Length: 121
Image (cartoon, rainbow, N blue to C red; front, side, top):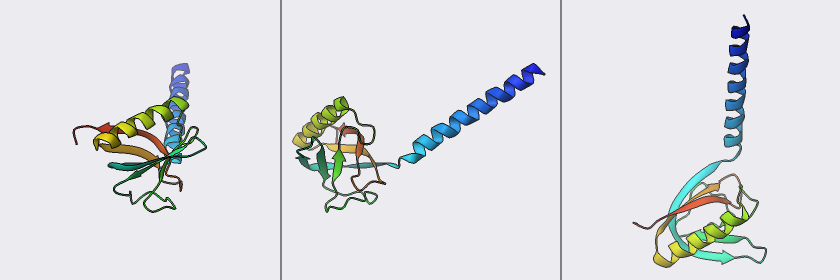
């Protein structure tokens, strides 16, 4: 009987963990977009904006073309990630490489969470 109870408790903990994980992932509508950077705009408050040669249909930015913000504390971005993404973005823009970003489509800032550069494009 004890083994059966232990299994039920373990099963309940696993289900609770999976539901919590699913809720955390679902809370942020992460969307991917790939394009070439046409503008990097540094703002006075430390944030910067990325603009691309094509907009994502899912970005709800109030600007045209779309602004994709990168800021410490938004969409889980740390200070170190903020600096590293700027370095990657500047390198990609310089060589004309495609950049793929992950951003929050539910925000009008379309805040970027991460990016990668495809130097083979």
